[in-house]
Length: 352
Image (cartoon, rainbow, N blue to C red; front, side):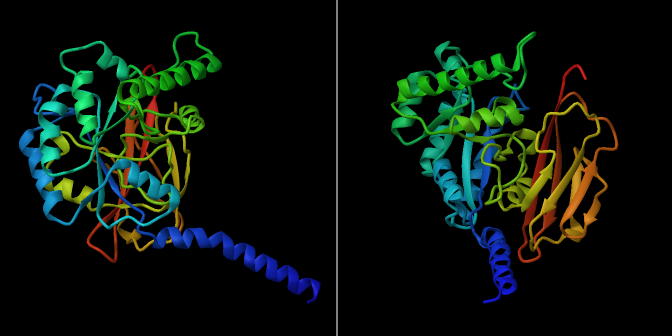
């Protein structure tokens, strides 16, 4: 074989190999939707509460429309190993250890044999606050098969450094926080999975690095379903509360598909830019990108295509407020009556 032919063969195999993972990822059924709840039947807290009748309607819908409710750990394992999941796979998660989880959610989920995961901050349980479950209730639920996982030690704003705190000191403090929380879970329950939910759904690149170094799969509160291209240290979940619990929206979210985002710039949600520019590169998809729509709140954003059907950018036309914001993008699937969904969170300094 001549030298040119050999080089051509090597290059052909090299570039073919580059595209094999992408093709298999797009053809895979390794996808799922994760819902996130907080309180149940606690009408005094509408921003984090779901009404009991709303919750029962949602469970009935999942139970009677072919959805497969799986343990969160099983979905994570499938993502890591790129193994198939059943279509319409769903995981149910609950953040914090509010007493209504035990009183209201637990019996209803147990009745339907729906597995679920509760992310808890152990120090809030240790303090024996009336509004929270105690370890006795948590151990009872754990014995019946409920998974409890790490939500930091005391639900602090982990992305924020204390006044005068160096980066090294912050890294040590946050690392100890997560390790101590995991240790308390193991002490009380005998075991705890390597799953972590960011308090308030807030994370940045530095916190993602800490979580990755500790071996956790981590979850935020930005919307969207998950798939082979999802970042394992920033997996999205659909928050469910009174204002976002109507059945039309819930059905759309339950049936959503992961937008095949190959690259996004920036990755870091923490920014000081009040009108941040986001650039997104997509893998080949059956999504109808002519109907791609992106929103900031209820305001539709202008989409700038950099490369047709592949790379686009969006930017807020008005200043984002301090704290948390999101860009949400959806596009209908051309093969199914379902929507691809992608969300990017922004965190701006409170004093910006």
